[in-house]
Image (cartoon, rainbow over all chains, first blue to last red; front, side):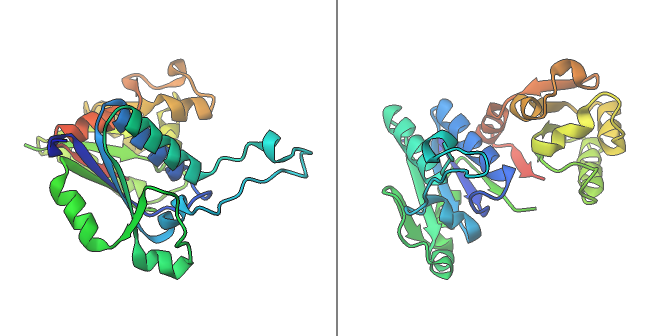
Length: 137
Length: 108
């Protein structure tokens, strides 16, 4: 794939905390709609987005079991984006900052998500058409 | 001249820093750069007709193109008719297009 069709995103928001996470995933989806390859460098709390042991839960207050609650999990959204990219034959790469992973103990991630460090962000940004950094503020 | 797209996620009613963010956008526009704004999340709230949002109003009066994310509006039960004049509707693809055009895309 030409590097002219690759975009890099740096993201630091943890799962289940902020509307930014929703917007971020919508943005990745929009990139795939344009047949653009996506590279994500996740750091700080965002390394938990791909954590394999996320579990859906029910809502006892509202009397709903896990299936009825349909609690969204970010690891499933990542997988859905991976599958969309694969169906469109475009790249979708995801690297978690290793130090941030170790701090949080979220080493076990879903397939297709790797471990790296700031040099990977540098490489991603250097090779991409453009890079967007989404801070927590 | 540079091309800028600001993604404005913060609103002036809960975030003091938006005043400086809107000032920066206006200054870049006044300096002759090609500047546009996409309002997302709570950033869409000052675009409501009648909302007191001096910073955004100044950008609109100055001719800065401003768009509101349709998804963020729908989440807040806002429709196009609820928006101030000159605020357009958009989705997030505008961000991807700006990035592909090598614009400076900045998250606020």
